[in-house]
Image 1 (cartoon, rainbow over the protein chains, first blue to last red):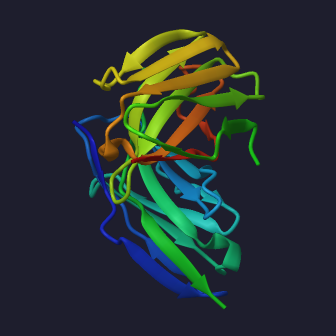
Image 2: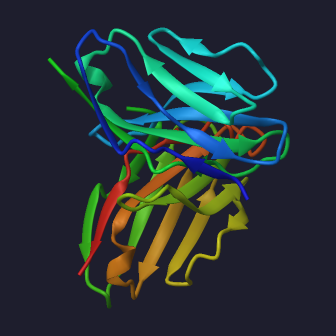
Amino acid sequence: AQTVTQSQPEMSVQEAETVTLSCTYDTSENNYYLFWYKQPPSRQMILVIRQEAYKQQNATENRFSVNFQKAAKSFSLKISDSQLGDTAMYFCAFMKHATPDKLIFGTGTRLQVFP
Amino acid sequence: ETGVTQTPRHLVMGMTNKKSLKCEQHLGHNAMYWYKQSAKKPLELMFVYSLEERVENNSVPSRFSPECPNSSHLFLHLHTLQPEDSALYLCASSQSLASSYEQYFGPGTRLTVT
């Protein structure tokens, strides 16, 4: 069975600084997707970034980038130039490729951005 | 706001009550999902519907009863709940089951069972 672990329940960062959120996962699959979702205090979960395991290049979306280490089964999220609006719960998630399957979520990291 | 809405946003109910949660998506998607989000626990997938047919039921107690009358609407009927069922219930949709890797979430219903 696949599992996703987020070992940092809470983190904080000052506005304009960079912060990295950690995620590790366990799977015997070779083809899969990894995701970072953001859930602001308003609770609408939003997809931040997606990585296909077969792609070696790390995904980037504006200020958000990932460090995907397939051998280490690590998938960290880096937020550059943090903004107050980045304050949210961040969930790492895993899904097997090809067959429709369920998202496996981690327990989340609460990120607070301070002015 | 995304194209997925949920009502009510907050619900308090007694253990003997019957209530329903509603989800509506305005994205033209064909797959819809119910998740349960409890504090300090990963999101748990409860039900999956594709083209109004249930394709996944993750051993959810029968006191939770889903209904999908059409591809735009999803309900979760609740009856004789337990206090441990208090949680945030999230609805999500995707273009199809095959594209379930990109799900759009609603804002959730905060349920409190007293």
